Length: 385
Image 1 (tube, helix red, strand yellow):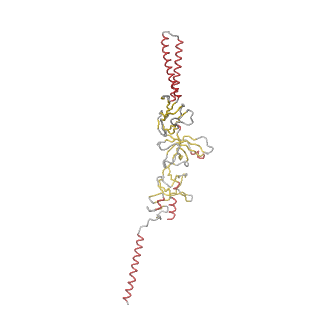
Image 2: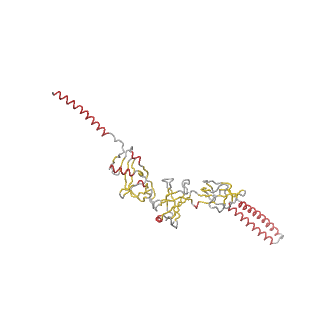
Image 3: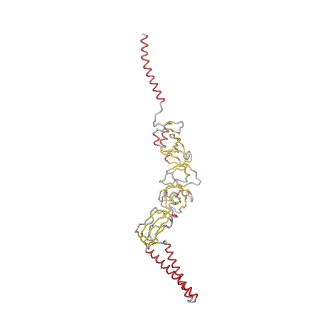
């Protein structure tokens, strides 16, 4: 009986040991295996910091960029447009009526002062040339008569009255020759076979051309034949709301941005503040001068955003408004401490404009800020605390 009982006990114990060993091995493998890459963030030691593994899908929804340095503005950015600087621009009309026979300067071409632009067949120019030739011929004849009378007066061959008459005729001929010569000089002083050549008065780029071969042109035309401008000098025209008039002063720096070159800034100076308020828009026109060091970049008639810079302004980090979120009355953003590690920070804003916010405290220049997905991080952080 004892033997039979012992055999039955072994028959029961062996399967139990096998099952227990399997379960123990399974538990060991489960506890020691690395955690799978899931969408769940890993809770960090600090309650304001959240960490993701590099395979976390949430990272695909985040966008991070550097908080750039920007002088503290006096007010939010204003809408503006670029225009030609009239002090470095010439609207060129023809001084004579005629017909265009040859276009010399093309649109976009750089021309020097005195360079030919267009050739015009002008009867008026031919008449002016003929008058000059006649005046110079008459002057040469009067000079000969006067020199001859000088010789005769010494030998008493003529009376003094005749010499005085010759001298008066000579002076009249000189005046006429000078008048006709000045007329041609004002017109350019040169031409070919009655064809007048219109020249550029300044060096610059042909920004507009409103003439073609065969066009009849007149001095009283409504539009200029050519517009020559120096592309290195531009005006920035700002329509300033009247409530901001005390924020802008002559000589103040205005930082300019255009959509064509994001994150690139151009500085200009306020030169004119209009004395008259537009009664329709309730705005005051402000004009700034901008030196366009790279003429191929900024163009006239571009739309721009202008930010008035405060006097003695210090540089602050500037971030897009999408990076800022609020909880209660406080503003927050997320800073990337290292790849996959994000820290929530409370910040104080200097100015929050339509597109950008300027952070006074809580963020340093050149720190990496989450600009897209800040609300996602905040909700995830609330879930792991």
